[in-house]
Length: 491
RNA sequence: GGGCUCGUAGCUCAGCCAGGUAGAGCGACGGGCUUUUAACCCGUCGGUCGCGGGUUCAAAUCCCGUCGAGCCCGCCA
Image (cartoon, chains in turn red, green):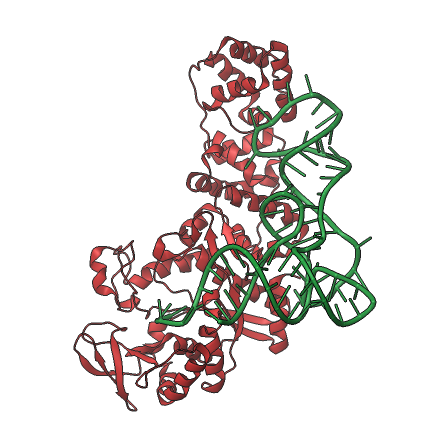
């Protein structure tokens, strides 16, 4: 049974209708590691629907979150914004109305492409609208009980004057430099490190501290299930406190937890926007079809970490996907976005043909036809996936897979010349890819040249390197007549 | 100090949640074609399922313990 179906069946026992929360913070490029939360949630959503239940996804963008520090990708002057809510900081690239929107917009576009339907809620709006007001009041009123629970669960000491609320300083605009000094029915009083002191309203004047904010939103948005990173899942972590706070203070059952592991970039460690080890989602989905992006995540149980290699490793995952798509594999099913028609042309093959055809769709189709594919069966699919092949190859593929057809003279030894001449004579248009391949060995033997040298000679003439795509189907794809001409031209 | 994950064939891993004859891919080896070029085919080899105990008619699977590897929490979120 697929992990998403296991979770769905447990959720269905509780209720037939679910609201699944997600909450990636828009503090930097939203990357593939973050995407795991979204895809995991969506897999559960789809499994629930397949099981006859109802499910919807909510995405809470915490744009009230303060900028922690000046990340390496930010200009010097951003130091002055540290501590201010992301929605109040200018876009570092100047193209959106705020820092948070700059990172949020491309992410939301990506979700659309990935077929993940979400109800988007921004923390800033929810606070301003007063949705949190009852929760803030409750938290302030019960702050001692809350502090006690946090002490018990985390073992950490909290000062007696601790408040679970972070006022937004009206003077310096920071949210992490203020201290609550008191509250009444209408205002929360504070002082700030900047020297300012004043009062803020319950509607947008600040936010609950993380451990409370999370719990409050469960109740406000009626959340019943939520995937979250393993950092929240550790003992004494925010889910542990959240569970008790939800039950004992907020009188709301904690959502069904789906902890997930990080996605590492092979050889580089965990993806962290702050460290610049990222594959931004918006960029990645230009290079890989959405169903593959989903599959990378869905094929692995959430609690297992993924060591992701966007080069050869990814190519192997694509092979696996293409193999399983015709056998109704559950991971594949949960990964497909809409009705995609897959042809039998492997991604791997398209990469070679695409390069030969210089990414021209028409030429690519002609070559594939010459290789025995039926045009009407593959045209639509090839047109769609060819675009991905091109971008993937340019951005992520290892150099060994790339080649350029060359022209002009090529320096060859006498043996090589003799081989090429004879090989060219024997090549004929009716040969299959395999026959063309075998012919190399035959002619090499006849001419008395090492097969190794023979192959190298061919590659040097065609692509100017000592290696390339498997000779048989490469020559077949290029066209035997064309290859013959090229051989004559070269020496 | 606590939590999670992993430990199964030479390598990468599946199987474990609902116990019932240990699997796949790659590699190696042999053959089809005496010979590599990441889309040949067929076959063979290959595992005390980390270790120790327990439950059971039966354990890779469940329970307890233990060793090793990695990550996370104990600032903030």
